[in-house]
Amino acid sequence: MANKNLFKYFKTSPEIIRLAVMFYVRYPLSYRQVEDILHERGIDICHETVRFWVGRFGLKFAGEIRKKRAGHHSNWQWHLDEVFVKISGERFYLWRAVDHEGEVLECYVSKRRDRHAARKFLIKTMRKHGSPKIITTDKLASYCAAFREIGVAERQLCGGRTNNRCENSHLPFRRRERAMQKFKNCATLQRFTSLHSQIYNHFNHERHLENRQTYKEKRCAALSEWFQLCAS
Image (tube, rainbow, N blue to C red):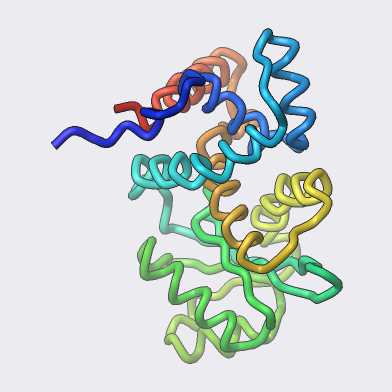
């Protein structure tokens, strides 16, 4: 059975839609800034159209990226960390798990930073991605308690700068958060972080570890794959 064409009833070409979604999610731009950039390229659309495209196609693009990258991450060492995010004056916590190569495995939003939240986040991640040999965390006591309950306490590693890999993975999200002028509710935060993390994985080539020629080849391959997402 042929795949359903997601762009069937849209007058705008799929390439322009993919380009607009990529600009908004990948870079810290507003809807109006994306509108201006596309206008300079001869594409006349409204910023509300960009908003609609991101909401309509963003998660579908992220889901296809997730399927294509399934099983390609490393289970040798995971890094777990959490940051606080304020929504309407109320504090929430965004938990993130990445592997030792910087691949974002899972994002989870919770209202608390206790043992129950850490346990739920870890179980959710392990069900989707398997069990790692080493789990690197900061010195938050909730991790220790959650690991003891699950039975992986001997795999925990913490202290010093061992968790910088995960802390650095929060930086693109923080830049995006400032551009969006924060979030309206918890569901919006969870939805956007899931979308943002997959697109970040797709375009993350660890430029500092590659020579110029290899980086250019990977960049071209990533762009080519992006413009084929959800193609019927």
